[in-house]
Image (cartoon, rainbow, N blue to C red):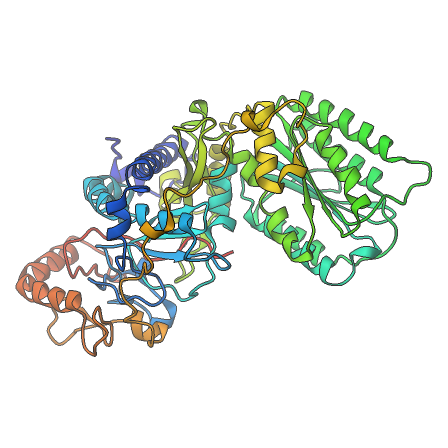
Length: 614
């Protein structure tokens, strides 16, 4: 097990950055993420299709919205602070270290067999995580924090989070569009969006394209590079200094989002110059080492036929894209993927976008036949990257995201994530992503700096150190096209027969009669406000360190939950021990401003916040 020396870890350095210790801390977290990934992959194979597992899943899960948790406790400390509950100096919010909670992405049916399978097999992660946190407690102590939150986001939109806690934003969390999920399933990349803002895009279509483009931007991380080209009768580059890919930091993403929001639909349609400019941005950035040396993608969306400039034919555009894709791939020594989206009811509009995709080895075309499908189509590009992250040579891959404020408090943290696969399939079948949170202050202490920007720079360096390999056969790629857009999206019908196609999306295990019809264990908190079900206060009268809340039930009745009552009993029994422990802590020179740590039961502790909400 990796060891750290506390005096060096917590010394604020006026000297050089301690990159060696920083890398050691980051490496340990990455090791934990990979171990978590491996365990979840084994659970998938062992439990997903097990009939007993499915049967026992009936009414056996706690959701993050309505369920009253079985064993809520109230640990103290800044990392447990919930703003709407008060300061949280003594106690703040209920957390259950004996169970995880689940949620399902909006627009996803809870009755979907694949969703049910994801919820049911993932519930077995709880006991393993409890044991792992206890095993690794010494390591977390040396890093200077408590064991961290761990979570699994399924490709189906199901999400499971440990330790259990209620979410304030019920029913709106979609793991598949969060930076930790997209980074963990696609790796570092260069992205150029090429967006049609000609006159025909007016109205709802323009609004939906903006929403889709913003979603793509917001899922990118500091290990990615990005620029935008918008076009009507002319083309305009939105890039760093007008010619370089931006690093996808929070600051540069805000610049791009503002530019997207300011777009207005007008004018003719100049596809040729728009795509030419997109390749210019990629090539200049690669040549000046301002791109990541990893895979790249152009995301091109249009709703009309090319009308400008005069004299340019669709064949000219196809020749341009073929030539420049080959040039850029050769220059960067990595594939450039070309995603082509056409949204129109007119059949002739789709001909050129499909031809552009099919003229290239890594091209994918999608027909968008309804405006309300624009967001889903454009933001699902990363799934092609995910196809090959399951290869053995990508086994060490872990992604990091730029630090963000956790949604339930004011803690600045980051997430390390990794994809999981059904590796019995060829190619491995993408299942989802696991993640572990870590407060950013711990990484700053390891690096020996209070400068957040320097710590982010080191994290970015770490994130792009290894680029995932992308190696798809022709028929594997055509299988992906078929799964994405049906038979009409395929490019290689003459080369790849139906028998040559492979599975790229999971199918359900068995007939639906064997699936539970109710996942939720109880709805004991359904009638309570967020504050009523989450906030707790310290029982200062007894001075036992036990935190008492009201109206949090596991049986739907008034009063304390059974878990809280049990916790109070335990607290009373060990009150003297807690007081001795606290005295020793204070006498040992602890700062008077540092909050006490209060345990209601002996479960390992972890931050209670969700992964990023934007």
